[in-house]
Structures are given as structure tokens and as C-alpha cells.
Amino acid sequence: MQEDFYRDTWVEVNLDAITHNVRSMKHHIGEAIDIIAVVKANAYGHGALQVAKTALDAGASLLAVAFLDEALMLRNSGIDVPILVLGATRAVDVELAIKNDITLTVFSLDWLNEAKKYMNTGVINLHVKLDTGMSRLGVRAEKELSAIVKFVEDSSHFAITGIYTHFATADESDIAYFNHQYKRFQELLNCISQQDLLVHCGNSATGLRFPDKLYNAVRLGISMYGLSPSVEVKNELPFPLEEVFSLQTKLVHVKKVPKGTKVSYGATYETTEDEWIGTLPIGYADGWLRSLKDSDVLVEGKRVPLIGRVCMDQCMVKLPYELPVGTKVTLIGKQNNEHITVDEVAKRLDTINYEVPCMITSRVPRMFLKNKSIIEVCNPLLNS
Image (cartoon, rainbow, N blue to C red; front, side, top):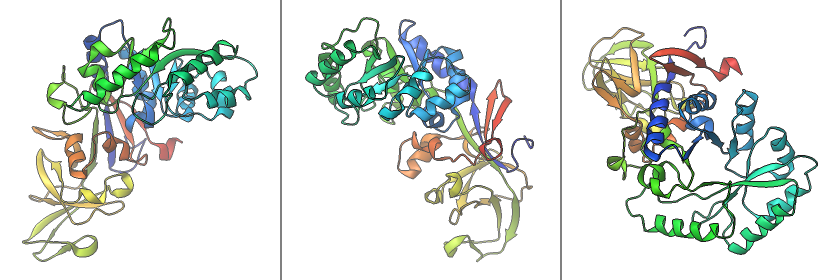
């Protein structure tokens, strides 16, 4: 470990859990439906390349990312399966996508007309994004969709290989709007021949809850990482998910201070008795935000409180007794019978679980484990 990073804070990514979650989804939806593993945003903060390889080995057929840069990183790292860019790509970059065999999302006729100006040779594969009620990217009207289909049919440089939409409320208990979007998707599909197309409207929530509405592919995102799409549907999941992400650090300084001692910026915490204080080398510059003050961490399998304000690079905990420097501290994950979940941290931050692993910055090394053994360590500060 010391050969790969030189600080006592790191993320552990359990690749066996990725395998479990992908295989469980595959079993749930059936062999006829392809899994598109969503590895955008550095695989939701977990590590895009390592997660992509593991997901493909576990049964995923394709990958999806948000931007062309993310797709190029995977291509440059040796990934050769189909990659779909879900976000908007600049028309001027269409030749780069062709050169690297990357599938782009088309979401308007205007984009096609602009992209045509930059086409010289080759064919760009496209998935048409339909806006059925998310009001983000996508074609809303039958007339524009028909015009896009005709444009592609009349061109030798464009090919439609897929069509999809995204649901705004598939992870909510009230499914009225979900049903509205699904009906609208069906209506728009009537404008295009679906033969040989990859048709996907489902995200993790849809795959878990409505496998009969998936067509021939599902985009597996948040649940590939072992997290429920929402708190609302957590109790109705069809199979157990295994959480992939944990955040670890160590005590770097321990001292006993007398009653009345102030701790950290603003002197907001004051000891009420003689207390053992431990310093942790993690702070808000690592993504462990100031608003996580007063939350718990795990030391020797017990919950102990963070005290005082979180600093940029450090924070402090109240220890039950003297512990040696180097003692492992878990901020997210398990120790013995205690578990601080991503959902618990998200609740403290008044946000969703998606945000938690994404917010842990790249200066925190990622350690990848299989069969409880370290197989790789990624530290962008040293390996860039």
C-alpha cells in the first residue's frame, strides 16, 4: 500500500459486490435483456475502468457514460465493447467519436444538421433520446422524431442503432407519472421501426421494480454499486444489494485534553471532562464535508462522534479511551457488527445516496479488492 499512496485515508471498492449486483440483476431480468453498465462520473466515484471491467465480466454487454471524454478514457484503456454517451456531444467532435467507435446520443434535428457539416468519412452510430417528461435532453414530438428518422435514412454517414428515454419518478412509490412517461414512450416508438434497435427506457429503479417494461436493455447505474435507487423503494427490492464503497482512514494523533478544552475552528466544541481526542487525516477537501460535523465514525467496532468543525484536511473524534496512532477508522462501511451506510451519510447531508461516493474527491486513493485481496490501487496524484 505504501508504494501507491502515502496518506492514511483511502476508499475501498469491493469489486466482488459489483459482480454480485450485476449477476443478480441479470438473473432478475432474464438473459434476453442486455445490461448497460453506467460508469459515468468515474463510476459514481468508484473507479470507471475497474468497475467497467468487472461489470462486463459479470454479464453486462455495453457501457454508458455522460460525456465523450469519459468514453475516450475507456477506449484508451483498452475497453472495446460498445460505449454510449448519454449526454450532449459537440457536433464538431463527431469524427472523433467515429474514429473511436463511440455511440452518441442524438436529441434534436438541429444537432444532426450541425454534425453533418463535420462528417467526412465513416458512419456514426446513434441512439435517439426521447423526452417523455424529464424535460432534459430529448425529442418531444412525433414530427421531429420522424424528421430525424428520414434524415438518417437519407444519409450514408448516420445510423440509428438504439432509442431510449429516462424516467423521472421510477424510484417513487407513486407511479402515476412513471406510467404517463411509459405510455408516451410507447407512442413515440410508433414513429420508428424498432427492428435491430436497442430499446431501453429502464434505469436501476425500473429494472428492479418493473422488469416487464424494459424492452431489450436496462441501464444499471446506482444499484450496480449496491445502493437502492431511493429510500422509498428500499424495502421492496427483489434481491439484496451489496454495497461496494467504503471510506477508511487512521488515527494520526491522539492526546488527552482537560475539561474545558476547545476543539477546531470557531471553538464550537468544548470538552465537558478530560477527553481523549483523535485526529483524522481527512477533511472537506477530500469530500468529507463540514456539514458532517457531529456524525459518527467507527473505531474498534464502536461508534464514536466527530467533534468540532471539519477542517480542509483533518477532523477530530472523541475517543472512548486511549488508542494507538494507526488505529483504523471507518467513515463509511463496516466494522464488526456496526455499519455506517452510504444512505446514513446521505441522510445526514439531506441528499441522495448517489451524491455521497461522487463527492469523495480524486485526491483520496481508490483501493480495489477481489476475494478480500487488494488487486489494484489508483492514486491520480501519483499516477496521472
